[in-house]
Length: 138
Image (cartoon, rainbow, N blue to C red; front, top):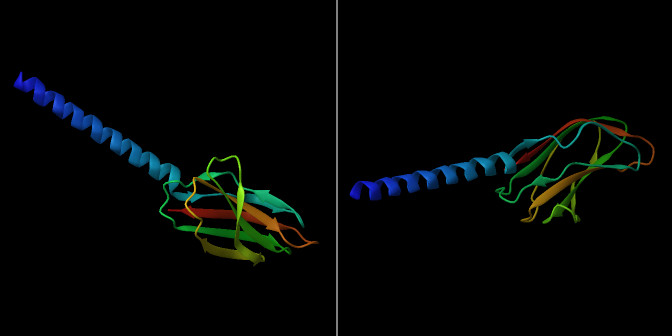
């Protein structure tokens, strides 16, 4: 009887450890790391392009966006936030006045479940192409 009691406790502890390890690994893979919101994306004059939504509910609050762009246009990156992933609210501009080259901006969204990045060509004549971009979430 004593052996069964200790065996049950040991099994319960192992199950708890496995559950905590699985949740911790899932949080890191979904919430942190480097994402690619735009790749080979041309934004025409006066137009916008939107990234996919990124779950950031467990992020620690460190965010940066790096982009490599070409073209004669001028880009802005805008931040949209949501708690349900369906209804989006503008939360201001991450960076504006970006011309061709490599650009990096840091930003701090409020505590929310999801963010989305919008690339906006602010000029009225020329387009810009985002060759690649990297969104760092931690």
